[in-house]
Length: 389
Ligand code: NAD
Ligand code: MG
Figure 1 (cartoon, rainbow, N blue to C red):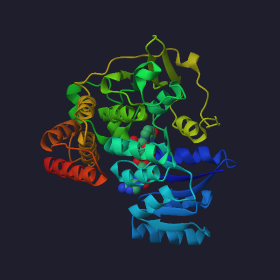
Figure 2 (cartoon, rainbow, N blue to C red):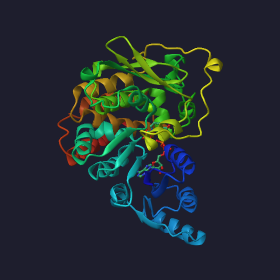
Figure 3 (tube, protein in one colour):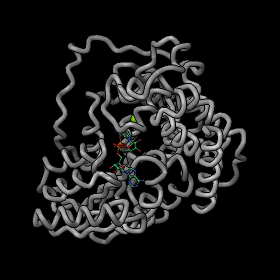
Figure 4 (cartoon, rainbow, N blue to C red):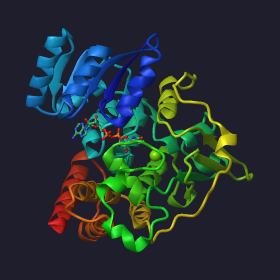
């Protein structure tokens, strides 16, 4: 029996994870569920999955949740705050952690799971982008297992040999090919991008996701963060990571080998596939995802990405090459800019302008410890806020 903590249980990935777990009650029990503000949804999840612990973001939210659980007769203990998130991510009572909080807020609990040697199912790419080396070192030291949930990285993982050890050359890997849908604005006239609304930006053609990652998909910063994520997960250098636009999102990514072979993983665009894969690895379990009907899809289409349309993709490659804390600064500036866009304080194209200026203004340094990284994260956020005002 595996005992699972889901960080970010009320989000898009959290809900899909619970959907897969519910199909296999003989294999999985929920140890803890966490949410930031959506207390009613969390209460309903607690009633259904009966976790030992539930964690929310504030004392008020904890009070509200406790009251709802008492009314429902549910015995789940209620806690709040970052220390409680770290505690449920590293508790002896859990063996696997789904890291599905959005953004830098997920860093501390995800790192706590890494230090505690848990099996980590990593959806929270921002945590890895920020802390790449520290995170991978923590995993190596504790012996934690790391399984990618991001569909592209999960696909690459599936296309690599089982004994793969983050050394592409030793395994004959020439490149990893990250596929990208291109998001909702792949074909829209570039001059009109300034005026797109948050509603248009979050309307992804193939995937239903949280608001932040949906905007990241529209700017292609999501793919940029995934390039950095691939660097850390697979030990690939920037030039060994290629982005291919594939609007149908049927091929989730590929690995190109030196003998000319290209291996791909395909499936319907539904996150329950990578979630089920990572949960059961190395076994396979049913996920609820329909079988792929290739004849109905008919054709698969590919094209090269355009850095003028998608400057955020270029910014992310630049941050990866700059190394140190540059990816953490990029990530922080992006989080602030995306939130300002969603709040209608800035236009869509201001997102890349804010990030460009923050990258110029905030000198990047070493990424030697968490405190240093958080300080850089804070400076980048301040610089981004100042630009937005
Ligand atoms: P979401 O917005 O739907 O859910 C986010 C979850 O995090 C919620 O449960 C929320 O309560 C929690 N949360 C938000 N702010 C928090 C804070 N400050 N402290 C603690 N908890 C907080 O997001 P999502 O789409 O589920 O994405 C989650 C993560 O998974 C992101 O890092 C995203 O990049 C990654 N991811 C998502 C998808 C997808 O299909 N949705 C695919 C690949 C990767
Ligand atoms: Mg992805």
